[in-house]
Structure formats: C-alpha cells, structure tokens
Image (cartoon, rainbow, N blue to C red; front, side):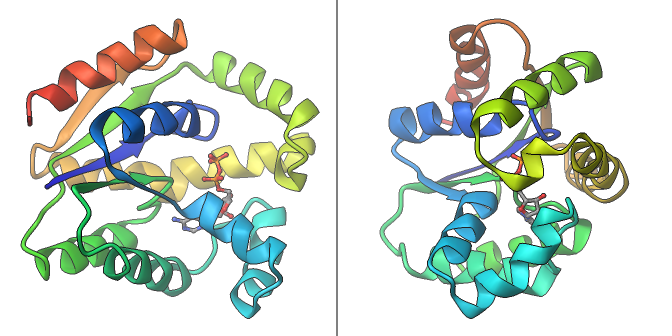
Length: 191
Ligand code: ADP
C-alpha cells in the first residue's frame, strides 16, 4: 500500500494536487474538509455540530474527525492506498492515525509538505474567496484565524513526522503541472 499525507497551510494547493495524485496513483482521497462539507450539506448531526467551528475558522474536535477517518478507512478494505488531505491537523490526530494504520499493518510512507510563501498564500485565498462560496473563505478575519490555527495547532504535526524522518519539502509555487511533477518525483521513490 501507498499511504501519503499532503501537508501545508490553507491555500497551499492540497485540494488541487490531491485530485491529480489520486488519479495517477489510484489512491483513495480522504479530505476531512470535503467530508465535513458533505456532512453539512446533508444536514447530519455530525455536520450540524461541525459547522459552527468551521465557519469561525476553528478546528473541529479531534474525536469527530478521527471517527470519520476511521470509518472511511474501514469502508475501503481493498484500497491500494490513501491520500490524506487536510488530516492530520493536530498531533493527537497524527497519533490516532498511526494507531488506525498500524491495525492494518500499513504505515504512512511519506508526508509531502507543500512550501508556499505567506504573501502568495494570502493572494490565493483572497481569490478563492471570490468564487468558492465557502463562508470560511469570504471573510479576511476568518482567513487570518485559519492561518493562526495552522501555525499553532497544525505545524507541530510536521515536527511529529520529522522525528520518524518522514517529511519531504516540495516546492508549492509555480505552475500546477510543475508542482505535480515535484510531488510525483518524491512518490515514485516508494513505487
Ligand atoms: P483548507 O484547505 O482551506 O485548509 P479544509 O477544506 O481542509 O480547508 O478545511 C476547512 C475547515 O474544516 C477547517 O478550517 C476546519 O474547521 C475543518 N477541518 C478540516 N479538516 C479538519 C481536521 N483534520 N481537524 C479539525 N478540523 C478540520
């Protein structure tokens, strides 16, 4: 199996690159942001509980997203591998993922960390805010909150995986195809 984490701040291009990667490597795409938005649009209990956190740019509680990811892993027993996008976002989520995967004897192979400078991130998020229709994209104060949450709670996840030598930095600026080529080059080392 090939289990990858695509890591980086909001606006670093994880969603765009994930779509291309799952197609090329035949992986199951697990985006907690997408899964949560689906729960909201179908008005499930989980979605209703998550909505308030998301609209404020805060993280949804760990146990909620961990449960969701556990269900998705169980629902795909024949998967060739998983691409985790937007998860894990806290160190407890990373540890829980390790436990879920060790039960399947299939660890995370690598954490691909998209490198994008802050000025470019803000430019991209402002642009996305004009078209995405997402409440958490439209408001600059909420975007700022998401960047702060990233620095405080999510960046430590890269430190967690660095201790196991699993993090590779990949250039996240330039054309979509160039960035994709950089990611593919790293992934091909595991194939
Ligand atoms: P982006 O790609 O812009 O960073 P996402 O679509 O991944 O945003 O996530 C949107 C929101 O969903 C987050 O701000 C957070 O509230 C919630 N969310 C997504 N993934 C997680 C997670 N792993 N843990 C907690 N909250 C999450």
